[in-house]
Amino acid sequence: MGFFGTYAYEHGSWKTLSEGELPPLEEPFLWIDIHDSDITSVVYAPAGVGSGVAYLGLTPRTYFENPNASDPTDVLREAAGLAAWWASQSPSGDAAAKQAELLAYLAADENPDGFEWDESEDVDEIDDGDVFVEVKTARFLAALDLPVPYDVSTG
Image 1 (cartoon, rainbow, N blue to C red):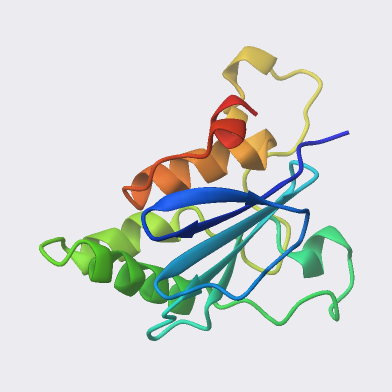
Image 2 (image 1 turned 90 degrees about the horizontal axis):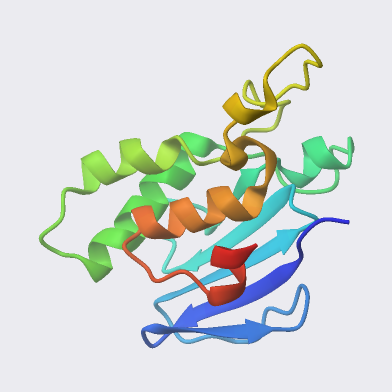
């Protein structure tokens, strides 16, 4: 069984929520929902040029092998939206550089090029961020210059 956790970042701090709970939040906010160490749903507002929804690890469409599990994902658009969200918190920062950095974390609607199990591979050489989405989520939050909720940082 993988890791599950739902958190909202609002007013400069995190609060832990019930699984999948997305209550009304005051902008600017960031909401993350980690599902079974495979998917992190990221909802953010204001969305700027993005849709306000991005994924880390796998998208629901890929994970559930169902095109109706989520809307199609445009990682370039979401990276721009998340960079704009970050820039609203860090006005002196370089939004274009942040967009390029965040793009590396976002999941597209296909099997990721990253982790595929190869029994001959040395497991010590596999990056935990390619296996456990909570590790990738902690790194993503650090890239956004946000603190990491305790449960996420400890997996």
